[in-house]
Length: 279
Ligand code: NDP
Image (tube, rainbow, N blue to C red; front, side, top):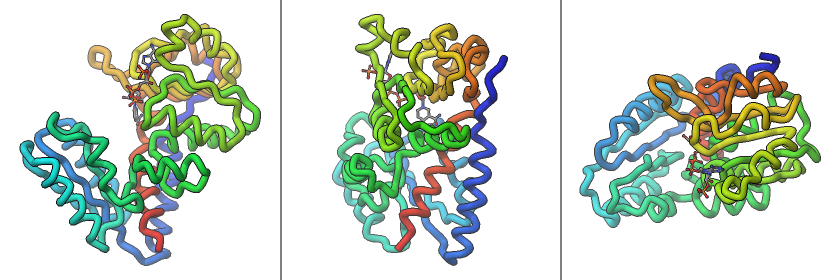
């Protein structure tokens, strides 16, 4: 392997230290409130990790578990109660919600200034105008990883694979703000057999699809930066979307999976919370 590993943990540790100092300096105790509707074992272990991280930074963490049969109107009422509580700085509605609840619609009831995931239309709108204080965490994690390489994005050919609302689309906006030349590939690109052609040009490649080995090693441009957001369980292993060993022979930087983007996202959620706690 010739690429250097782009690991998320050391960057997360630096940001956590900055956040601890900021909380101490401002003498605040931010409050994060998390709502889970129904049973979801996976989400519950994620929430325990979120609680542990919050408390290690000096953030108070509230967990609300509502019954599976909670109606949309009852959930809206609950969200509004948290919106009106001045002590609460951030609200997270854990997805997925039970089938009878429209998750997109519910998220829009969270006040934009308490939407620490940065997915409220008002926050996405601010991202478009480069005025966002709260940035979707996974996209922000990718930007932190690129920034840690000290490579200037100005005019660079950057290819994003995946155009989801939580990763690909906000990322494209953040990259444009750096004046990168951004290409966003998606299922249409693959179906037309054009993915390789775009990837071969990529000085920076970011992949967020959720399909193991979608990106073949030989497609990776020599000397490029490769950020693999994908998380896929294959047997008892977690892998990304990129053929890691082959890609690592060609790239100059590459994220491991696990250990690249993942460890940074939860920390950046906390950074959004502390941003929300600013007067
Ligand atoms: P989505 O399923 O919402 O989006 C996947 C995207 O990939 C869509 O734009 C889809 O296009 C596109 N796509 C699907 N198949 C292909 C293909 N063959 N070629 C090109 N594009 C394709 O997923 P998310 O954005 O939520 O997540 C993507 C991956 O990132 C997942 O593995 C997820 O687990 C991981 N993830 C990791 C995080 C982390 O912290 N490390 C955080 C968030 C996500 P279309 O919709 O048109 O089919």
